[in-house]
Length: 301
Image 1: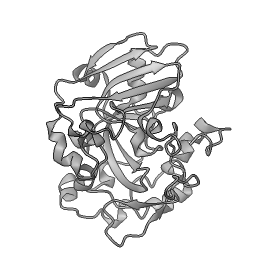
Image 2: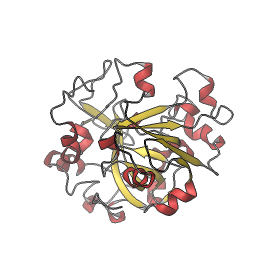
Image 3: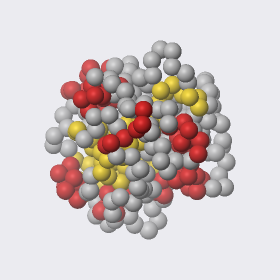
Image 4: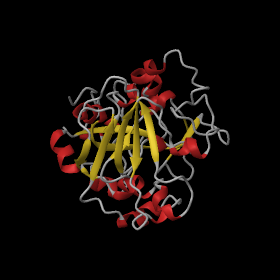
């Protein structure tokens, strides 16, 4: 069932694609991105935001399978073959199998959502995604009783992904969510950006987007989804569990061991742009705080 989360933003709130390509600014009266319906602090913060350009979104990426530099994915990801593409869905589901992108797209209702995107490295963007709620895909597969988590896996293609030749991480890249996080209406599977097919460097042809968590949780180029009773391993937690927890919620009160998370740099703001305060749960506190009621967010970081 699509449209469970009401997007308060429309295309009228964002600069047209051609203007993005020319790096023109949004008109002052457009009220920023996400202004309406957000928490009071988020309202005052977002009123000052400008949307990111297509160039920002597609040329400044973390996708280590194509290199560790921010421009490496845009330079190298053209080698990834995205057609045909299948996503294996298995584990505690009624309808396990290999789902082609054609099958998935035919069954889903695509909608546009403009979300904030916050990297654990303390930079941020605002991105207009196209896609569908992950809950709809999980409902199509039929989640069984006893399921508590959802695990994800990125494609591993050494011939197409030059970055996996180096042991930066334990390949393939894997991620996971608690089932209630995965079923939350904000959690989506993105297949496009700005009404265009999602570029390879941004996670083509299908990626996860969890806007209240740090960006590395939003795993790219997904080939497997496993519904399980056990907390799944995640790549950055395996690499350094002291610095990267399973939950990885955006939290200005819990710093990374090597830098503060209290503020962030907006990509595209220019060399002298001021850092802006980080919002709790990236500004989606009203929507998701109840998921973590009673939890110690410092211990469960």
